Length: 450
Ligand SMILES: *[C@@H]1O[C@H](CO)[C@@H](O)[C@H](O)[C@H]1NC(C)=O
Ligand SMILES: *[C@@H]1O[C@H](CO)[C@@H](O)[C@H](O)[C@H]1NC(C)=O
Ligand SMILES: *[C@@H]1O[C@H](CO)[C@@H](O)[C@H](O)[C@H]1NC(C)=O
Ligand SMILES: *[C@@H]1O[C@H](CO)[C@@H](O)[C@H](O)[C@H]1NC(C)=O
Ligand SMILES: *[C@@H]1O[C@H](CO)[C@@H](O)[C@H](O)[C@H]1NC(C)=O
Ligand SMILES: CC(=O)N[C@H]1CO[C@H](CO)[C@@H](O)[C@@H]1O
Image 1 (cartoon, rainbow, N blue to C red):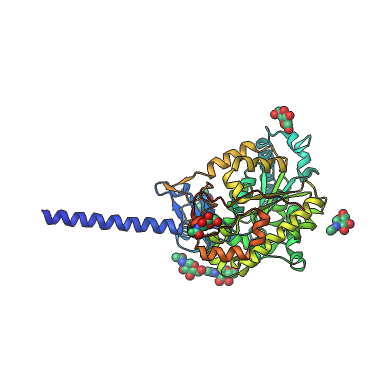
Image 2: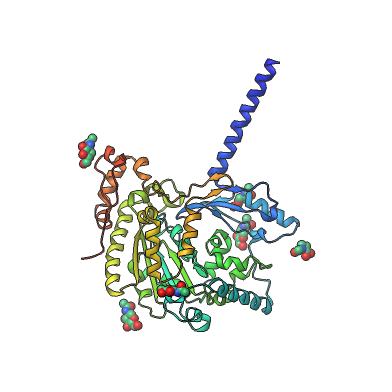
């Protein structure tokens, strides 16, 4: 009897360990599935690491709306739950990549566009237009000859730009042009000659002209996690039974022209190259430059596969030269295009989200306090399938490097980044004790001037 008990205890112990291991495997691979729900209402939640930032969020999946007990659907489910991930994004197998062959009835398209029009009007029925200095919503809508409020976020990998991009996208009826330069890979575009194509893509997208952007659509169709950011588009495309609307340039162009707010974020294009876009009076783009302490940046980029392969990503002297160049560009742009550039630091956004987000709203001239508050409260303390999310923009995230980086590494980094750090208001750590002490606040005030 006693032996039997011992066995049971051992067995239970072993089971617990296995469960723990399985659980931690899931946490590492970061696919959370809600097990009790019927697959029809399955929500796949994935830690997106789109070569940039990572946090837990919902990823749209095609099968989500294809409620049909046919074998192909089950195949899709399997695809979603297997371990086919690269850089944390889920690769959908070829079977579910939409083909352009199936055509849509013109009336279907008109119906979807009508629905979008009325949704936008409804969502903005309480919008205070005086914030945006217009008399009617039509003044902000391209379809009716208006000019949307366009916001471009410029940053670099793992500076918190996914968070900022999604924050801006929380504004009702915002159309998010998500990372149009993703197909350029882990590379910084620094020279004007290299920027020509990138700028052309950005300009065309902001003008809702998607003709000739096949490469972008092809890239997008392979990685649906993009749509987890382009949420507004997805809202309509997910009901499309043939799955090709979201890759149809003509449809997207028309859809895009309905939205009064348009945003985009780029992590591959340095600020001084956006001069051409700022000078385009028809676009009237406003730019938010998001900076981050290079020590936090490098800590966050360490051990990221996408980053290890590109010196633009891991080489401190290149990274910090970009920071200096962004500073000089910011100074020039502020002089030449007053009121068109806002500079924020990730640390300020994380430590003072209320104040910093209000600066963003004032800058954008958008009535979005309520949307921002909702976003901030749901994205700074989120619980997913019982697992507490790693994504919390709270005090400890921006300064995690203080406790995890080796001081010798920090010392070398600080030498390479001396100028960048002094320009952007990041204080040096003089020794390990000081670096790790709670009293050491690495952030101080800075100004863009002189
Ligand atoms: C489910 O799939 C079958 C065969 O592919 C099709 O005939 C049927 O219309 C589908 N049902 C729904 C609700 O889409
Ligand atoms: C997916 O399709 C591409 C081109 O359409 C092809 O080259 C590739 O081999 C396919 N992959 C699989 C896993 O079928
Ligand atoms: C709209 O905003 C302006 C300030 O921008 C304010 O003066 C006005 O009272 C607001 N209107 C409403 C209806 O809230
Ligand atoms: C800005 O645009 C004007 C025309 O609108 C053009 O004459 C000028 O050369 C442009 N400047 C730059 C720096 O592109
Ligand atoms: C570390 O640096 C601080 C600030 O410069 C200094 O006060 C302290 O004495 C140093 N500690 C050691 C162990 O060198
Ligand atoms: C489990 C699974 O389906 N793995 C697949 C992941 O994708 C590769 C091709 O990219 C397949 O060979 C694997 O079978």
